[in-house]
Image (cartoon, rainbow, N blue to C red; front, side):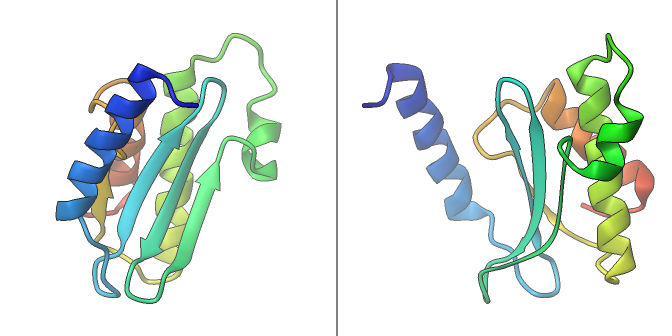
Length: 122
């Protein structure tokens, strides 16, 4: 059973996905946020494969995040930098950003800004 806010989010997500499509030349960078964690994936929609992914649950980030009192937006910016680094290792330089139905502020914009600073173009 879904709630009213979940229904609204799913409608926004579907409306955005009608317009945003990842190709092999420009894959789709999508961001998902839960109450505790932030996830980012780079997806080629033609083949349906994930080319790169990062989250705050990755071992490389967990060790650096052991400090207490780190804000979720700071963690999200580290996730954005990590996914951009993994994309650049695979020679992916341009992506299409998919905010996944979320408003473009807070953790979503932190992931996008950090990915831009790390070298991704979108």
